[in-house]
Length: 192
Length: 273
Image 1 (cartoon, helix red, strand yellow):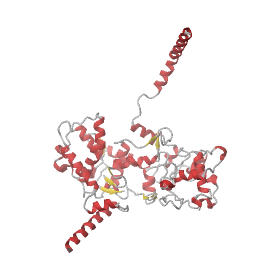
Image 2 (cartoon, helix red, strand yellow):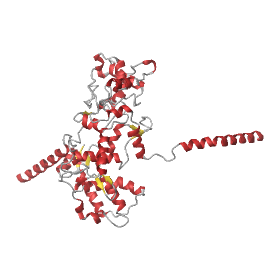
Image 3 (cartoon, helix red, strand yellow):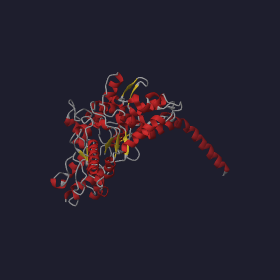
Image 4 (cartoon, one colour):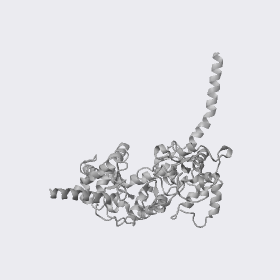
């Protein structure tokens, strides 16, 4: 018994010693100093922008000359991912909370759609930056189109004010499908 | 009797005029309107507090602000109208928040390495002192000049930051405050601080959050809405909420906006939503 324990200890020690250089190497590769708040800000504000945001960072905040709008849209379309099974309509009640929780006066840090759009007529505190979505489900828009617009609005209106919510992962594909259901479902207050 | 009525009426009218002037379209809550009618602006508490620090807060070497800048800020009248600007002694462009901090560490003997002091400054001394010093320029015209190479560099940076789209919300200052100015986020009207010379009301008391803010607080907090992130957007684990105090980009945006406000008459503290 004792022998086995000793043998085990030796093997263990050997493994530890063998692994040490690798561990040290990994540690050396990691930046030793913690990033300062300013370094974090600079990475987030400059480095983490994608090339498309860089194109839109001009005085008009639109697609600049020399960049093809069609190419832009095509590239954005290619980023769109669908939920498992390709189901673009989920649960409208969950979608309602993501769109803007009526219990919180239409607030939501997730979709936060009421910041720019009106929807449920009960929610009066809605912005006028985007078009009103009241009665949206009756307009005959294909739910798949709605899904794609929410996932990556720049596939339709490059550089627009509307965030690419799926593209950056602010909303998961399933969550976008829930919002699509909230917009299209006949039972949803949007369409009543 | 008549005279008394007239007096009350004129006081109320005066209060309303002052109120509407600074608040613009936002409706003032009842308790604040009553205070204004009595001639009391919540921001004035900060001016008084700042005045007290100015005269009585002693640095480790025994100096106060008044030692160099004169009793009642006599030598600082008009200083805020030209800020942010380049200062030779610190060799950089500073806004009021940074300028006062540098005064305290360079001339009053506070240790720039002392994190406790820096925290105390940022939390306690900064806003009242900045508000007091800014109020010394009341009635004067904003007159920011872009002359020194470092001022030019900062102005260009400010302009660049103004138009930079970033973060998971694709925001830029310009998107909301230039392109969409006049529209509403929910019920909140989006002002155009560049055209409207809004800088004249800052530092301002914000009745929405019951806080006195300098422009540095205002700009830093704007970045929260960008949804900036370090690795991949995650509200709980990876949200870079604000740039730190004295970040170059923040001072640069202040310079850009204040230059655009040139000619505006300083009226501090402001009263805003």
